[in-house]
Length: 311
Image (cartoon, rainbow, N blue to C red):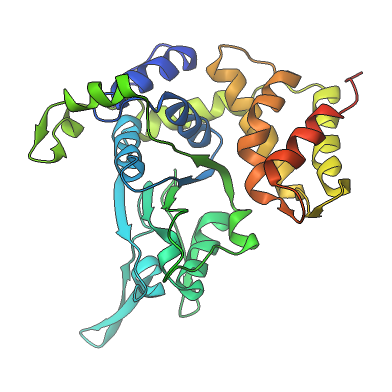
């Protein structure tokens, strides 16, 4: 059985950034957040302009995790069966043919280009880690992580994700083009034509056994009563602000706590602090707020700035 290729979760964070930078440069914070999500058993929505390495980042992270990986390119004619699977007749007996979700890391590319019925096929998988086909329930592999991508600048032929599905994502990560120095560094990477040629050089750091061990460390992380109350108070505060039509859900509070635990562990600590919560809050909460007359960014800043001091 292969042992994890890292000494501690603190060193894992730095090694993951090193490995992913073999093909994607200038996105180290995104790598950290993807690692937090993997430890916290959460799914990630990556949003950014064309050519900002959304898909490549997802593939590189799957390689670094050392888990099984599949990619599905969403289009307007993608069917739910392609995601969940289908029964076919063989020798007069029904046999289940698994869909794309039967993997450890699923890259759902351009998720907002497929209709709601197909998007909804991911809901049960993301929340329950199971799929139901023709009345039969099938359990997905463990671990199971969805990395979905979307382009916020496309407005034709797209189907925005409904709030119920956005709430299933632990994080929404917004990628921007990297700075000039990183773009120069990008040009120096080995390429085969226009395609980066280093994916196969990324060293698997965890594997399924290693990821399970890391998650066990996360589950034993200490959370004081004051930190737990801070999380709940922050979530409730977002529901009370002027201009916020829909604030953070109870699920959002659970996700925020899990992300704060992972952040603490990757920082080499076994106890969550208020700063862990505040650091993770923008990535966990922004995409869940529905606002009118203000933005989710502004509403969250106000919520954080008016939080009472922890006792």
